[in-house]
Length: 118
Image (tube, rainbow, N blue to C red; front, side, top):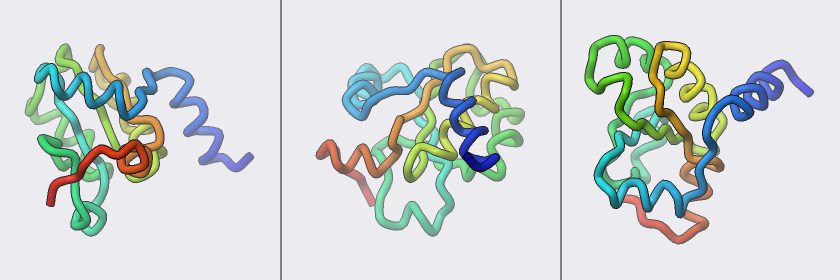
């Protein structure tokens, strides 16, 4: 197992991993912030409606700017769920108390038949 694979496994073990259906239900409730940590070149093909685009490389800066509160429910997504697992772990380390990620990422979202918007 590579070092990065190990880091992702550790991150996944310490965060809430949601299925696409669970994320869809939470988005429908209107009470969560969905953060898409993909780069702009990856989001050209589409994003989940309502997602806030914050590339992984600047997530910690964004979180520190107070664009959402640490006690608000946050769900993170990425292409395949690797970066989002690490991002969710980082948010927890920054004091965010209700954080989850979309297991399998945008790939799992589209396989489940949920739409993306351009």
